[in-house]
Length: 128
Image (cartoon, rainbow, N blue to C red; front, top):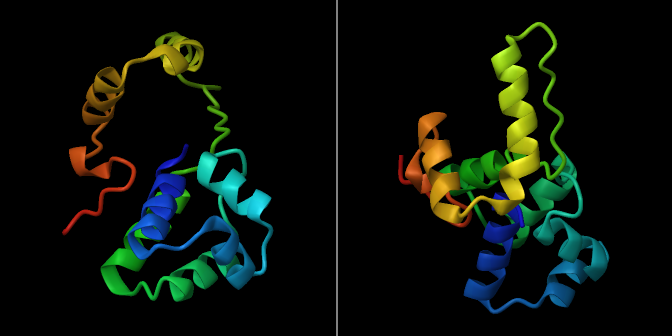
């Protein structure tokens, strides 16, 4: 599941909205919306993003945060290490092989090392 998908699912649950009802209101299939939530589809289009914001009546900082989560939620990332050090290429390849087996605490540690805030976890909304 992507950070964006986790937040959408959380919003649906908070508001008591079913996947089917939301999909119908957004004029997309339930299968597509489910795949978006689970990270089996890429980021939503700008138009769909706007529809989601309107559907949940999300504005200002919360809208900016949801858009940011969508931008960070591409489920298939390609890392171009051409021109980088051999160590950077090694890191990218080792991470690609190991990421699925990393415990959540190690993932959080890596995010902190890379400069991500702890409150950037899926579903969390930062106040700043």
